[in-house]
Length: 191
Image (cartoon, rainbow, N blue to C red; front, side):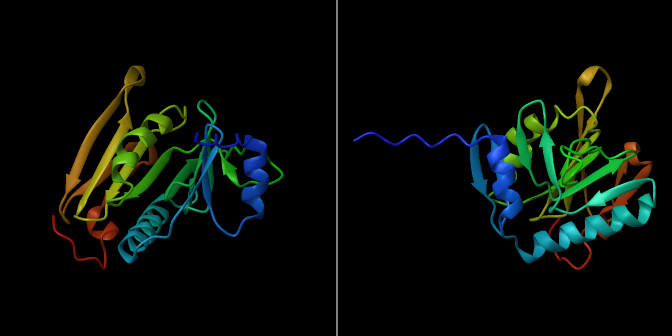
């Protein structure tokens, strides 16, 4: 008996279904992947990150939660980062919908046991082809630690990790520093 091939879904079919759906799904290379719910820690980290960024950015940039879809035109990925930040003019796949962002400056993912390997590896490989992206922020949900990939000269990326509640993450593309004490507020996690 042979395994049946999965049907190829076009980006247009995916977007039409996604806009009508009651749940979110990722899309990559003709396949659709359902997204699962999140833990209390994950949700608090996302909320704290959005509040902390929003309070520091003011009106110069927009901070979006995971309901803002991001499209990576270079490789066809459609996904929902936990947090997206765009500065300047927002660019969308279709102006009629304003639901698929093309030019984030910062993307953040909260790592869990089930998503951490993918967020650190293949997802970063796909994200880094976004020309506007300057920082990819990985927030650990198991301990007080934030890792940041920052775009450097000649297309290379620098990696830095920040640990402990007294640490502060510099995000030069946003002209701000992000205190870990704010991101991990109301969570008791090891360092």
